[in-house]
Image (cartoon, rainbow, N blue to C red; front, side, top):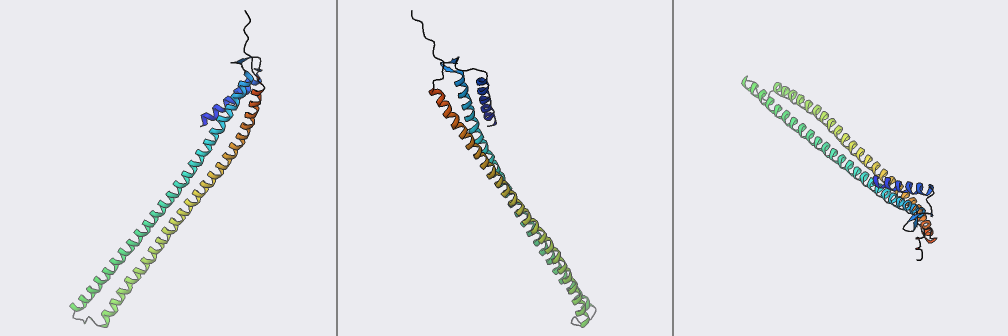
Length: 221
């Protein structure tokens, strides 16, 4: 497309140069003056540039829309990954809590066995106080671990939502740029079309005026 635009510009420039050089109706090709040929080349160059510019604008729009979709999909992927991290954190916290409860049960059982082995009643006040202390210690560990895990999960959630919002904002910005660029491209195309139409009318008038070099007449024998 860029090559086509360059070609159009060269045709237009060449036409202007030919006209400015004084190549007018005194000479021509196949009965058509160089001035008329120059005008036709200029009109052709304008047409090539107009259509190529329109194609380039459409291609740029498609590229930015594709980029916005890719950005949004990337944001969704990152958000899904953050949700997986959140689930892993919750699962790990549950595993650690389950282990603490098993440790608590083993400790309580060991304490009861120790008291029973020493001849003390397992329902005595001393054993009860010791076991209440053990339960309290494990509960404090559980509470602290739950708070820490909750903070980590909240951080993961904030990061995931922030990444998703950022991707949506960037995708929206790309769409806005694409729409603006397409509107500008269409405006340029309309302007070029107007110039082309004016040139076509002028060229048609030139042909009607028969601005051509007459064919050489054969001399009578």
